[in-house]
Image (cartoon, rainbow, N blue to C red):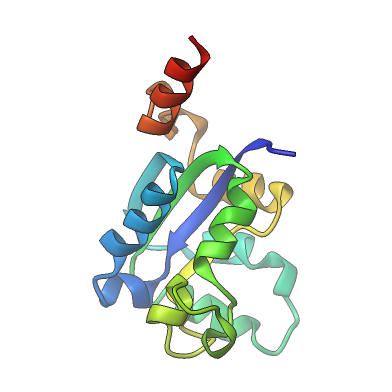
Length: 156
């Protein structure tokens, strides 16, 4: 069943440093998802701790916190039908060597620790992560993207 959702996507510091932001945005846009919020920012320690809170106490937690703060990220909110699963499919496995050919991580990620992009894994995670990086007033959902214009015309 198709369900309209929102998801959080971030181009991680390695993706920003490697100038992959446009390519990553292009892939989600070409799929037909609607970009409703975006900004480049330096992740604060508080944001990093909230974002990776479920990993507190795990051996890799300090590396996650250090990495996400190692440079700017591009934080985004995307909207569309089954957008969470669809974006995760476009990104590919967190382990680049296991990612399906043609996915973002298979094409651009070098190792699991620097895998270029983050995407929410559930509706609850999406809403939690969106709230870390965006106020609702920063989300611009009042325009129609091309997919929505086509849907409206097909309904007439």
